[in-house]
Length: 155
Image (cartoon, rainbow, N blue to C red; front, side, top):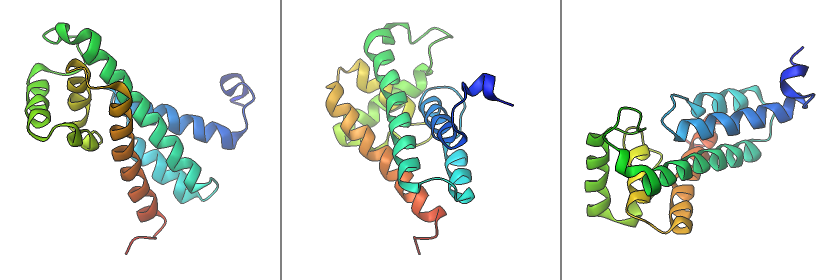
């Protein structure tokens, strides 16, 4: 029925692509909740938990890379209504980054702070590969904990 939309993609493969897309969007300013989709797919028991965790981590990290690029090349537009992060949030994130430095990027997964933090990292010209590594570690750790908790492997 959805063959026209999925291009004939296997239903199992469609779940992974959907999770990647939602995880990517959740790392940008768009309101998406990748955690709910991941938990739902894990609860269904039809997909590989390790692959789901990797896909969610990759999508979410890549979305943060978009934020880094926005900070790197578009920060001078931060006062405009269309800019993805309000100036007040950027200033708060800058204060966190100045205080804690590069390790603060491990918190890029946190609500309200994570997106502005990744934009600030771009505007401060943090090395892209180091940025990707630190953000990826933090985001992957969050999805690993969520996966383990959903599967009942924690406590």
